[in-house]
Amino acid sequence: MTPATAQPIAARRLYLVNLALLATHQVDAAYWHEWDVFGVPGGLPFFLVFTLGAVALLAVGLVRIAEGARTARTWALLCAGVGLFTVALHTVFLVIDREAFWEPASLAVLAGILVTSVGQLLRLPRAARGG
Image 1 (cartoon, helix red, strand yellow):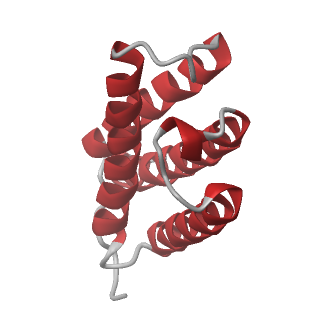
Image 2 (cartoon, one colour):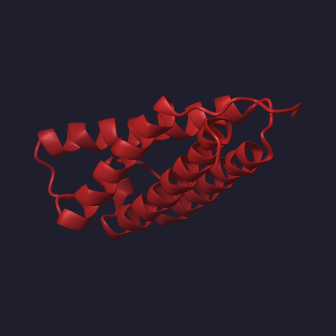
């Protein structure tokens, strides 16, 4: 692997790992009834529709990055931004001592999202062709 190809491969891998961690976080969020923790109306049905849409949207970004699309950098920024927003929001609730998300596994997923999101920002893909 040459240095020129290492960055796109790293960008794809980081995006995939972050997407997997964000999806895993949503499983954890369902366990904690996140809609109640954050006071979001609609309960489980809204949460499921939101999660389906969010994962599908970010999956489109993974495809665009794998294709080397012109928009790959934007998709990577979106995924990293979602990750950082997720961590920031949960950090606020952890600081005010909510009971949810204090399990070691929950904290490990959030830490993984933080590290991977920062990694994405450091390894943004370069556009290879139109799209």
